[in-house]
Image 1 (cartoon, rainbow, N blue to C red):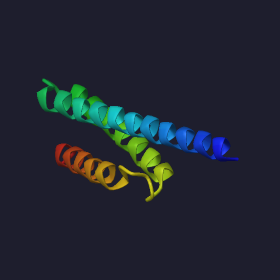
Image 2: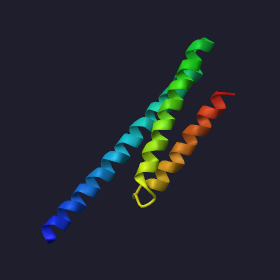
Image 3: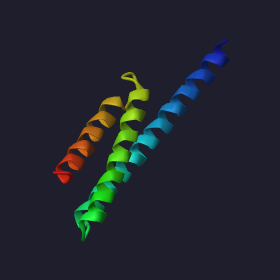
Image 4: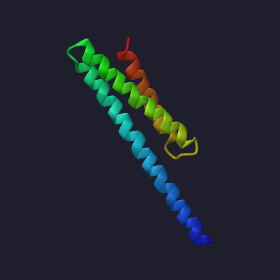
Amino acid sequence: MRIQREQIERIIASSNRNLSLLVSADLALGRTFCKVARLAHNKESRDRAIASARRAQEAVARYIESMGRDHPEYEQMLAQAELLKSEIDALDR
């Protein structure tokens, strides 16, 4: 019984790490698209980059929702997601 519990705990820890990596990757992707939007030379490129940043931000929001508040990095990821959303909103004005 103890072995099963340890295996379950390892699986949960691994799942938490993988979910954190996925959120981190999409946060970085969103920030990259924000940078591309700021550097764009025309409205079409800027709008396309902003739309891509929004898609990354929406994915982040879905992943964070699936994390649940008990995830060890929930608060940190939520704060970073809010910063990304603010950055995108500022670009979209």
